[in-house]
Image (cartoon, rainbow, N blue to C red; front, side, top):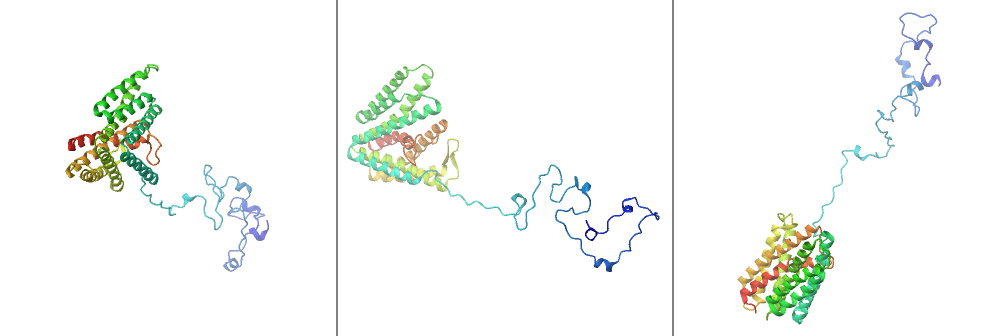
Length: 375
């Protein structure tokens, strides 16, 4: 350390206490301050890493440096280099945050797959319905057996309920055929025999949960094949294919109207605890679409049918289809599942397509019998 860099070195008397009198041996004080000489004084150079104030190592120990933390529990932060952005973005409260793009309203399913499967099912129904009636009975029977398998499988997976599938499948097929051949009497007899077969079949297993399993089996027999029997009874009439077509068209149109209107305008929930996606606006759409479809079908497809009968038929179908959809939604919510199966892409399983058709079948059959007779 030289004299030109740090000024005059401290003398021995500079570190002692102040004294008002002359001290023997002390160095005389320097000349008074002169502004002319102060202007010619060279500025003291800045040494990198040196403390801002003078002092030895004794003064540096424990002292807070400009780049260090002020307190011991404060984390050390590195100073950004010139032109470098700070590493902590939270220190810039005024920085604009990116606004997320608005999300488009989604239908929740693959619409292309759903439309493709729907068109294929309609073609299968139309060909089998108007070519040979027996072929359509076979299509209904296969759909019922697959639906029973989906329902019993879900009951066992989610609740541990073992509803016997074999007597259900055999009895369900027998109900469909009996309803087509012998009418309502044959359907009721087949239903009773199916319930008895379920009771006997379950006896081959341990008695634990016997009542629970047979109750679920009888419920499945009534819910799926017995309600579908009314479709085969409609088919047995002289104009049976047109009655079945009327039943399918009005139900599908009601579902489509509920979906389209509810998706576009729905704001008021219909039954949020059962099905949060259904709205009152969707129900009104189902009623309007179904009444229009019912009027056209009764006027042009059903012999001796009138437009006002179509209005009543459409109103009844929209209500029964909505209740049927809510009923299966209740079952799926109790089981904790979204779909009954995965057989139909974009739709779920067979039971997910039969939910509104099954409870609507007896309603349409009864109203057609009242309006135009049994045929």
